[in-house]
Image (cartoon, rainbow, N blue to C red; front, top):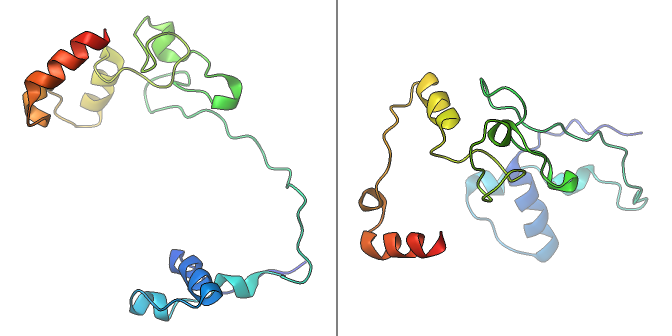
Length: 138
């Protein structure tokens, strides 16, 4: 039955922790942040689990049906599995689209990213060891 009209920022959580445990301030923003703990009713805590809606699976722009599903649903096959591309977990029903799949390449090019296939030497300081490790994983 109460709505707090305090200005709350992410520093407010740090302010609560530093107040509770007697710690100092990290910087001036932290020093002058509001304490989010002042908006809680510590004398009458409500431990009831709220009835929150279940979020729908994310749908990346232009990829059609949902690419992933919440873990609680067991990860339903999405656009990647339906199109025959391999998912990150190695098979249908995994999470997300394989980064080098045609669907992902089309998407990143459509949003203006200049896609070039990566090589281990672009990322790793010892690419030969990475290539050997990746070949052993397949």
